[in-house]
Image (cartoon, rainbow, N blue to C red):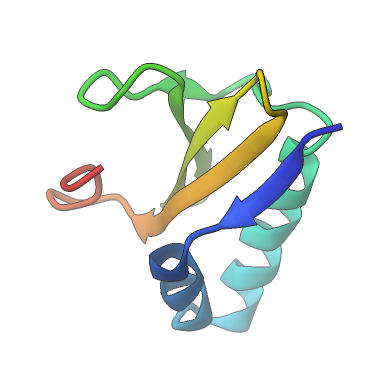
Amino acid sequence: MYRIEVRRRAQKELNRLPWQDRDRIEAAIDTLAEEPRPSGCKSVRTADPGTYRLRVGDYRIIYIVRDAEQVIIVARTARRGEDTYKGL
């Protein structure tokens, strides 16, 4: 099982979401501990290797998988837009 770390920026973004969306996204993040690359996840080409995105409704969970340490780092939780993937 992987350990999940949520960066401060991602946590702030999560806290601003409506509770219905936040609950769905948090549930999706929890499932990443068991399956870090679920069906539907895609590699983020503009970021470092090991960076993936998972779609949850209109939102994207952008996370980094570190297999050697068995850690998943949630970098962003954002609505899809022009700035979603900037600064990764």
